[in-house]
Image (cartoon, rainbow, N blue to C red; front, side, top):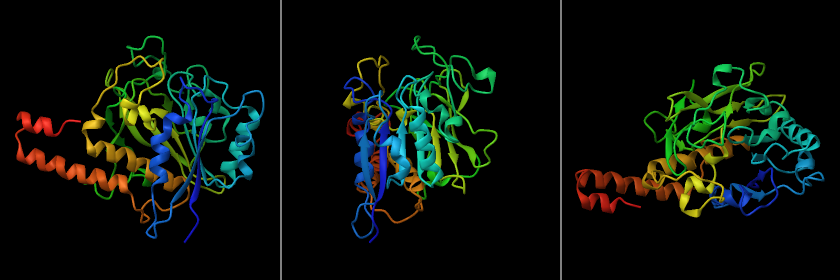
Amino acid sequence: MGKPSKILLQTTIQTAAEDWSIARFSMLADYLGQLRDPDGAPVFEVVARDRGPLDRPDPVLSELEESDFAAMWLFAVDVGDGLSAEECTAISRFRARGGGLMVTRDHQDLGSSVCTLGGVGAAHHFHSKNQDPDESRRQIDDPFTTYISWPNYHSGANGDFQTIKIVGDVHPVLSDAASESGAIRFLPSHPHEGAVGAPADDPTARVIAMGVSKVTGAAFNLAVAFEPSPDGGPAMAQSTFHHFADYNWNPAVGAPRFVSEPPGEALARSPQARRDVRLYARNLALWLAGQPVDRPVHDAVLDGLHQDMVLDEELEESFPASDPPAATRRGG
């Protein structure tokens, strides 16, 4: 029986009740923590934390290269000051020694402290740093939240989901053996996603999934994968941390007070979309930790969602779409 792979879920801010602190990613942590191998042993050991005070090196981030973590999921939720040069160097060395790294941010300049991270930092485009090389994309996409500027792609309301477009061959992180297409179809939506792209000078990087703006119809990148190589471990650049936030998986848990957009409820009504969201997280966790995505894993959550999907299909067959009892039984 092997030891569980140790995963760090890390934000770039100190703990704050009214911000995107690590407590607002608890559903992801709980989900990954419940995965078991065929012998019943945990697949992952999950450590979730916020950063320490900004006036000194963070004790974990600044020594990440020397840690026993297999992978780090970095939620860059700061306004540009979340990582010091020393910490960025340590994180870059962590990946250089083979560690897996997922780096995600949000709109405009939110999370722009990641720009100097080796390799994966260059995949993130912001309003005032490392701007998108395509100048035509340096414009507002979401017109509704007027105090937020570009990049801000509107893929839908928090609590709803978006249909993704697979780019190129299906990447292992997007694979779904139960799907007719062999790929995951849905991810959470967000009113103003950030911008990512494959650095032109990095042959290990490619865009693997795209979304479409519900306002302008513009296509935009959702995820950029960096394949493991002698220069570093696997990495993923993600357009928004809202793909993993509790609020996007279940808006009923609430959000920081400054969130002003009304949430949707489409994800709550779709077992298939909820399954895809969690399967993506599972695949990503396995891939970043250097494990086969198709390894046998007991997943109680996906098993339960599969049963919900079967019930959903049975109800669709039993009741006309306009039949009130069917709508009632499928609610919630």
